[in-house]
Amino acid sequence: MTPVQFFENLWQDYISMTPQAEVIRKTFADTDGEVINDHVAFRTFAHTPLQLDNLETLVLQMGYSLQDEYQFKAKKLRARSYIHPDASVPKIFISELLTEQLSEKSQDILAKYSADITEIPSDQSVFWSGRHWSAPTFEDYKTLMQETEYGAWLLAIGIRVNHFTVSINHLTSVAELKDTAQIQRVLERVKEAGYGVNTVGGEVKGTPTTLLEQGSTMADRQQVEFANGEKHEIPTCFYEFALRYPNAEGVVYQGFVEANADKIFESTNGA
Image (cartoon, rainbow, N blue to C red; front, side):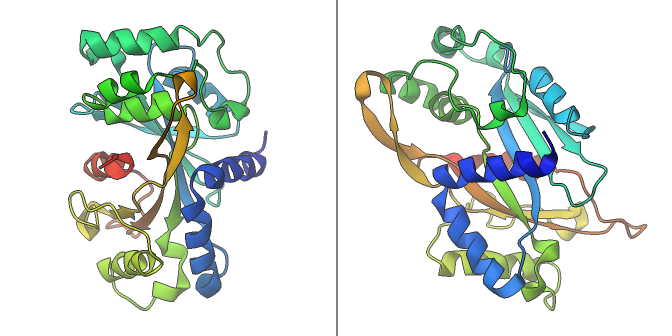
């Protein structure tokens, strides 16, 4: 599968879960033309056929190379980012929940469902495939939420893109503004369109000195069917915005900042 085909399929699944993203994209398209995607992100479970190492194989098949690795100790996650030699192709960020670090109760819940995952994914369609396990009970979802929001979200939503990211560097409508004022104006427009933004650690995560500033909406909410046909409205996916800065040599930074990403994860919180 080519990256173009991959991201076309991914976007259609994404906006079915995140209708706010299509509205926001069109808002910026009206003033900026094409809206460029900086990166996408995925969540998965370690120690299963869907673990990071197996998903990585499918990413590398599309011409990507490993960019960097990250640790989020408080959230019990590890992650990797991937970059494509064609600079117009979005970067990919994949994290996985280190389930062995969870409490015995949470491990038991996840083991019950992950036992349904029997096959290593063979093609890129896994990235919009949803749950590979039976519908969880709402009680299990709520129990898991108390320890790992990330794990509860993944248990309910499954394997699909967690967010797309608007590249602020490519938005002509804010080009005349300086540095942080650019992302601040972008987030103002998002709020003017009627959408809430993630305020954990401030609306803007990062600084020009870290070479990356990020902000995001709070996740859309949709009714999801749990076990026994029980339906509840829960957070789905969100839309992110990234502003990258050049380093001392004038090269625009293409990596990720763990402190920023840690706060961006909060965009799917149910509160």
